[in-house]
Image (tube, rainbow, N blue to C red):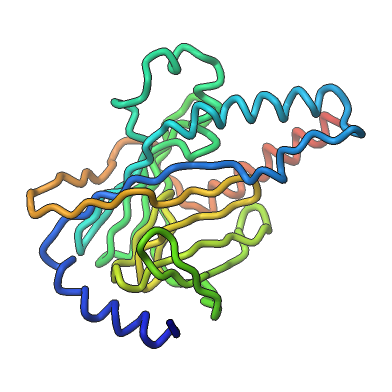
Length: 240
């Protein structure tokens, strides 16, 4: 299937999504080669890798839920269905960090992304813009039942390449973890050490409430990047 046919398919399905609310369930998995223990690794490194793999065992049972209509979306871990025994495990917090903490909200008309998250004991409401600053390549693959295109961009805060796969046949600019702006739903997010993939999608004509977060200290994404950059710099100085 070539890219033109994928785009044509997206036009055919646009009418369906204009009248429904969509609920997407994503699951997290580690990139196995990033967590291989080498003979040359020291004991602290081996212990850290083992701890992260244990946290992934908890995170893989999380349901990361994205809800959207034509105008807006929200996404977060669905904690109400998390096994209660996990919540008393110290690895539970690490597992939440691995998949992505907090609540994300996206608004198509306002080109707005909000991320409500607790950092260093304080609740923040982080503002960003919902724009297409991605480079869309020619690579495509099938994920589940959707034919997807690859898009990449450089992370503004970590200088690493971010990679996502989106489905033009679901013509909304939304995705999990605040990712978006593309001409189709983001079906998969790949970062340095893990992959978040759409596993189940449900369409409903029932009204599903999408709540816009309002609580928290208001800062921009650029201000957050500057703040976390200073924290990393200070930590590096203390380690030298």
